[in-house]
Amino acid sequence: MWQLAKEFFRFLREEKKWWLIPLIGLLLLLAAMLIFGTSSVLAPFMYPFL
Image 1 (tube, rainbow, N blue to C red):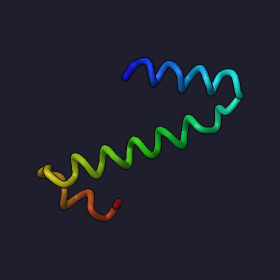
Image 2: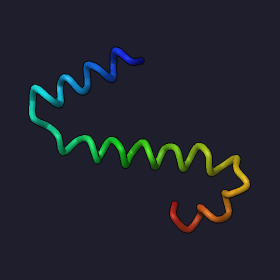
Image 3: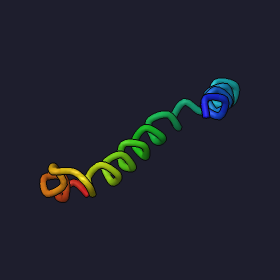
Image 4: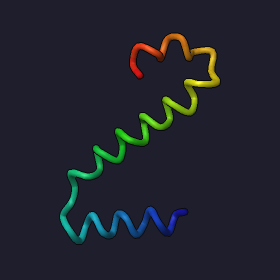
């Protein structure tokens, strides 16, 4: 897993694709909200954001 992350950041550095970092971060945040929001006590409060 870490090898994939290192390779991805090496690609970003070499290709000057720094604009992908916020996009990936946003997708990871959305995935975390979906995963933790379905089985959490906080799920009713998160529904307006999904």
